[in-house]
Structure formats: C-alpha cells, structure tokens
Image (cartoon, rainbow, N blue to C red):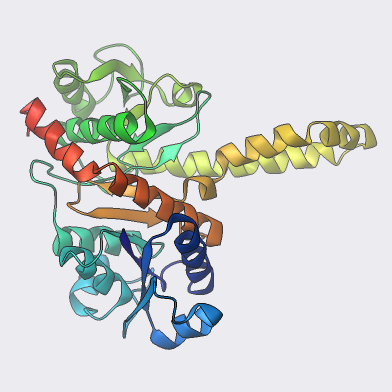
Length: 331
C-alpha cells in the first residue's frame, strides 16, 4: 500500500507527523509519501533519509487553518494538501492523510478526487466510545445542512464500515433526535426516519443523545451541525471528567492510595476516550481513502490514523460502498 501524508498539517507538524509516519512504515510495511516543504521533511527525517519506503514529494505552499477552504484549494495548487490529494487522484497513492484544515481537506477531496457514484455528500465519520466498544457518528461536521437522502446515505456508508471493517454483524442504525418516539424531531428527522424505516438497514429508530454512549446503536446518523456539536461535547466531557477525577484523587491521602489500586482501571478508561487510539476519522463517500487526523495529533495518533487507512484499503472499502449502493437501489 502507498499512502500520502500532508506533513505540514496539524498543530505538531511537521515533527510529530513525520515521526508517526516512520513508526507506521516500520510496523505496517507500507510506502509513505511525505508531502511538504523539502527542508522541513529532511530536517526531521534524520537517519531515515534514503529509506526505500519513504518518498519525499516537495510542496511550495501550506494551507493554514484560517484559510478559506475553497479559495485555498484553488489558489494554492502547490500546497502539501492539494499535492497529496492529487497523488490519490492520479492513482499514485492509495490513501491520503492530513491533520490540517478540515474544510480545505473536504473541499479538496470533492474538487480533486470526487465522490463515489451514488453518494451525494461525503460525511466525516469518527468512531466514539460507548459501553460496548464504540459507535460511528456521521456526519460529524462536513455538511451543516442535509436532506433526508443524505442521512440515508450516511447510514448506508456507516453500516458497511461497521460490518466489514469493525466486524459487527447487522450494525444497528439509530437516528439522533430529541425523543425516541416515532414522529419526534424536525422535518429533516421525520423524513429521514421514513427513508430508514423502509430500507434494508438494521434501523432501530430514533435515539436521544444521552443514550448513544450506552451502546444502543453501532451507527448514529444526523446532520453535520448536530453531529459536530455531539463530537465536540464528547471530547470536552471526556477531558473534563478526567480532570475532575484527578482533582478528587488529590484531595486526600486515602484517595491517592485508592487511585494506585485502581491505576489499571483509570488507564483503561483514559484509553477508551483518547482520540489518539482511533487516529482519525475517514471522509466516507469520497472515491479515494481520505483520513482526517485530529489537529493536535501526536506521533501515536498519526501512526494509528495510517493504520485506519490501511484497514480501509485492505478491506476494499470503496468497492464495498459501491456494492451497498447497488444493492439498495436508493440513490
């Protein structure tokens, strides 16, 4: 497998990105195409310069987080982000990873690589922790405004992912709403409910936000505005809870003793909520494997994001989505 990586994207670029790439290259036996400013890449590669599995693709520009997405893609044609996308478009690489500007990454994926036939809009699809392992949330921010057909397509793509990549038989699909009863929600939710109910997906109905972490569903669908709020709230809640637990532990000597006895449990809990373990979120619906890593990704997160891209590649995810679209007949 060949994967292109935007080494200039993210808060810890290029050092952490390159370190994560080197670790992934050694563990997964893949070819890495590092796209970015040549001097920065060479300065951080060190003794790995000349490795036959590491390829440098020189870029002249960087798309920053405050750049307007579409304008940046059109004007900065020699940026690390655009050149990385072009490698996938030209079939020089099998996947692309970036921790940079999310809007520009999405816009570039659409403009340079294109959508899977039958999918109207791609979705940002992270896996979030739940009591039974995790669930996929989509859309988590790519589409603020959606139509019912978009929600259905999100459910289809998420179901294929959770079944074929994660290994869950007949993934349960839940529609995020303000009540679990049929008929709850706004017009989008009500119309989406009808589409999902008539499909051959394992649709379990409306679910409330308080229930998604209980393991009630494997795929949770909603529009990108709601999904992004859920995502950010989950990240903030997890961080806040760990801080509060640490604060309570430090209040007394007995609490500290108890914490030592429960150390393994705390480590396990932190690991379940750590985005670094998942690495990144795929843009499902693009006709190429696109992985968006967290902006603050360290080398561990980058390595795991590359692992996720390899899983999609090894399981022929794009072909599976095409098959799912053909089987449903709803586009």
